[in-house]
Length: 510
Image 1 (cartoon, rainbow, N blue to C red):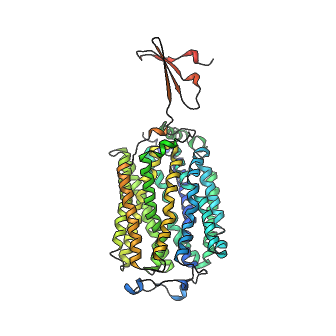
Image 2: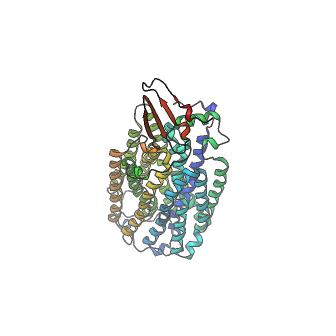
Image 3: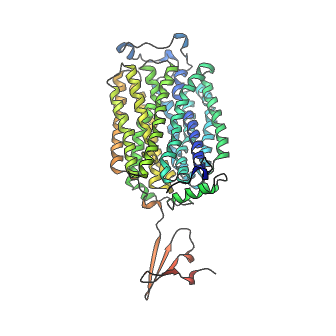
């Protein structure tokens, strides 16, 4: 259905204000998550390097920074310890995915999303103290940070299920989840500037403080759904509920676990998430290390070069989402749009990673290929990432919690794999193995999604009504036993020729 004029919706529709606030939340969410990926370069003592990069001999690369500009670092952590620290976040992150999604469905996404980031910002204040206490203490705090942030993505899916009209899902979901890229874009250069002027400890204090300020604004501006929002226009509220129809129930129904776990379209989303996260987190957590060790970039150049690809991903995601929603309104089905976007987002980066093995000593070509690989990942928000809401809007938060919990495993296994492969072996040969593994994951999950994904609402999204048919003479009585309903209003007497039907007044309350 066509949306009302923007003028009738108050010029700026409230659903887009909600999406913008969630976007900013994702910005801070990712800032707190990834800031250590760059900051750890300044935290570790340079003279603790356990191996010399092959790039210095094979490619003749030298360091781009002067000795006086290098960061001394406080800690003696090798590559394996560093991979444990960056990956520890996901050891906690995995456990709050499913509970977070279900809590958001039952109690509202506003409370869960805002509460998760409030906890995460408080935990981030303790990271410098934990680091100075030892690597084990820092790993524990990173696990707690992961526990705090685990509910963020599932709760935003629950938010989308109540605020996003079906034909605007790609656009609204991309606006929200583009905050992940924006957070990465901002986090790396901001961290580099703070490290240069105030030291690495200030990175965590400043970013945690900014997140707390956002949390206050979130609770003041956002409501769980249109019916409880006091600032939304009646025109927009009616449009959202009319567009959603009966696919989204006002109260969260019980989860049909058997149907969910035996649903092939659900497994297509899960496998796509696992493959995506192996490649995505390999790039996200280890791109700064590759820039430093193999391309010999100083920390300021490293920050810019590591963050720029996510600007491309952000812009590309907005373009793909707009095109995707336009195509869904006209020529292509939802399933076709999801599959095309997902294939671009996964097969494209796989080809880029394979191409890296041919240009290892060419800095410009390497940076361009990495930029392209990350940029093409912007298609995921129109692909598998929003597909949960297509197939089961009533359980979008729970489904996302399940799939993201599984997809969290590569979030820590992938960095540990990179650490194991490159610890003491900073060679192009070892990094080739990293890229081959990631490319294989990308291609495998893209193919499975292409064959088995769906764009239609699944039958198990709604509680099936059980019917009792009782024949009395030439009268047929049909009783519909819907959950939480008054049976006195659900008994109908139907004429055998089906021309007339009416509520049996004997069952109607006085």
